Length: 291
Image 1: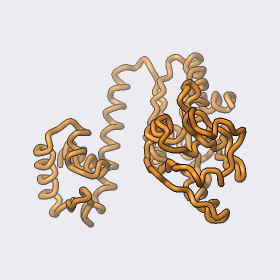
Image 2 (image 1 turned 30 degrees about the horizontal axis):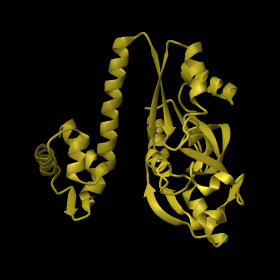
Image 3 (image 1 turned 120 degrees about the vertical axis):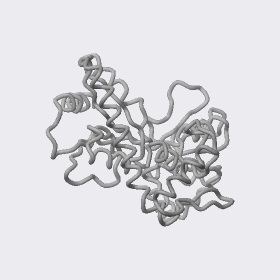
Image 4 (image 1 turned 90 degrees about the vertical axis):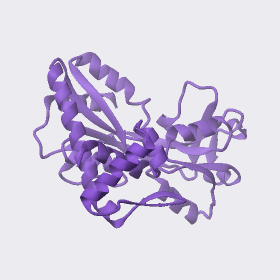
């Protein structure tokens, strides 16, 4: 089993087809197909079933996927550590950032931190909360910044950084621009852009059911950038955390969501059962000061 075979396998898992996977890892599709065929021969069975909808994992594929993903992450971490070791002039801190956390509130704190500690290197890893917590548990990350639905238990500790309102986001030509606040019922008559990575998505569905509100999901995406681009194009409206909305564009505007108001808490999450790096403690202290 070779590392490039694992990388190709995971690419197909993530992209859903051999064509998109080959494009993502910059290899020809025949080369990818041949590498995965050799991996299947070594593992003793097919890993994917192909149909018109794309590629789906077989039972064997589902069995080996978590371990192959772990092996790949470990190899990446070892390579990164080796590179850092050869540099010696910086101390790395790896921070996991949940993919729906906006940079507006955190970038000033990170900039202030690097001014005070110029020899500490910050590496930001953006991913889903579940993936980040697995990497934190394995020791690949020093800190995770997330908006957990439920606070994690030991061996993790969490620190509340700030609270963030959900707002209604729309194009600057939209009728909502004339309103001061917007209630949830007003969204019923609008094409709704559904953020699939929203951690409060199930809560929102529950609120809609209780209030007998039906949102028409004209489009869905797991990409915050795609949602914002569709808002800019006037394709619909979205519910987003306030600090995820760009403030430097004339194409997008927003108003506070009321009735009901939805708020999320942003936490720093870290390990309690490992000896803390002084650099990590310095970053946590700076985050506390910044909010």
